Amino acid sequence: MARSFPPDIVLLDMDSLVHVRLSRGKKNPRVVSVKTYRLGADTFGEGMVTPDLINEASFAEALRRLRMETGNWDRVSVLLPDSWFRMNILEVPSLPDKPAEALEVVRWSLKRTLPIAPEELRIAKQVLGPSTSGVQVLVVSAREKTLAAIERLFAAAGVEVVLIEATGLNIWNAIAVREAPTAGDRLFLFVRDCDFTTAVFRGNQPLFLRSRNLSAERTLVQEIRLSAGYLRDSLRAQGFESCYLAGNVLDAEMLETVAREFNAPVKRVTAGEYADDLPGNAMDFDAAITASAGVFAA
Image 1 (tube, rainbow, N blue to C red):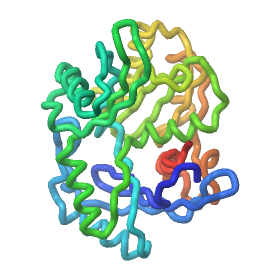
Image 2: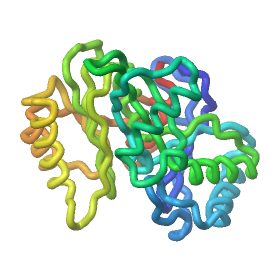
Image 3: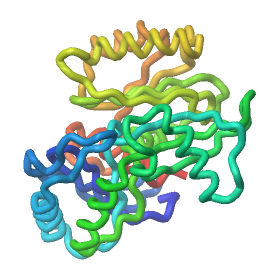
Image 4: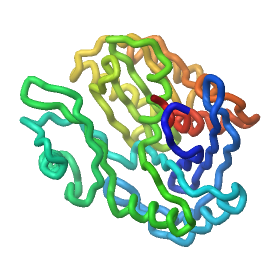
């Protein structure tokens, strides 16, 4: 595997965690095991930006069962739903060289876009390059309180968390490292039962990133149409070179809707392209396996 990370990945959600163990393969990583562990319905509660971890005993019990069944391992990568993060592409006049000063510039810029104080967030940033008004920066943030609680409970179970990242962005990592280089605009959509991520990349540079929660009032089809309309207006995007569609709420009608609304050829993302030795129930873990493979993308 290209990047030096532990073979164990845990993907968290409101009511479950999925453990994926990979090993090195000839071309793609091999799936050693994948299994879901249920969390109590009250493990996570509503929170600003990122859900609050409110039932630590439930989380600790799931980790205990996981460790009991999977043996002795001491490091893990943790992936969270995209909707647990805020993903912003910011333009700032300049970015200081000193990390602490650069972070303050980013926090100040985020104050206009977030419902909570930026000081409550853990922030990761990547400079994308110069812009007409300064510097463009990709910023991914989540609530520090929740991330620290997750790390603390893993540590209590004897496991060090080496990274916490968004699931959808790691699915894109798996895609991008295997696709031919291009300067064209590519669309990435990640669909789950309760949320929906839209991203646009020009080459490998992100132009747009957004994750939205779904509800009875805002259905997936409505969200697709709203996103397509927004991209046409804001990016003046009349079509895309390609569209990659990942997730577990997909059928032929959905593929046709996406192709029509975004004016792009649609490619369904499946785990078999990014990992080998899939289990018999791999369809239930398509996104989890693909995202886990993305952790190791170069």
